[in-house]
Image (cartoon, rainbow, N blue to C red; front, side):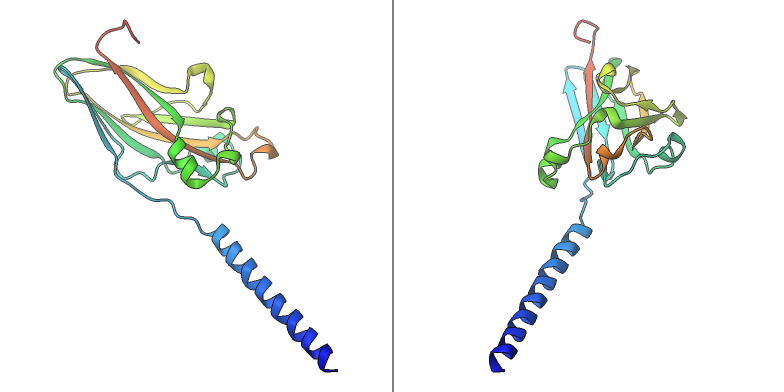
Length: 190
């Protein structure tokens, strides 16, 4: 009888340890942290100065997102940033959304990357909202371009979501992006 009790105690102990490990693993999977940082970039070349202020936005991320209609996507919390020309010459610019490889590495989700072709976006520039569009390579992921006058300033709100036409292949996928700005003084390289 004593051997049977020892086996029961051993099995019970192992089951309790397994339950604890499962609980810790589930808790870790359920809670993640997304750091919020202030990012300010200033590019100066001769008399051309460009200031990109991303404020305290939490970054451009879609984690455990599901496909939604444009109507629902347009209600997402926007990623806000400002582009300002503090130089002495007008500036041509191009704004693109690209993968944030640092965030992908930090999140450990390189095998879970969401295909850009499954994304849609809307950009609001100076309170004027544009149409919702696919984020695709046909446009080289450009979300806005133009010329910014001396002392000109554009404020933006970017919303991203997974297109409602996406299938089950997006389940468990992640997207981490960042804004890049290209600026020039003439059309030769643009």
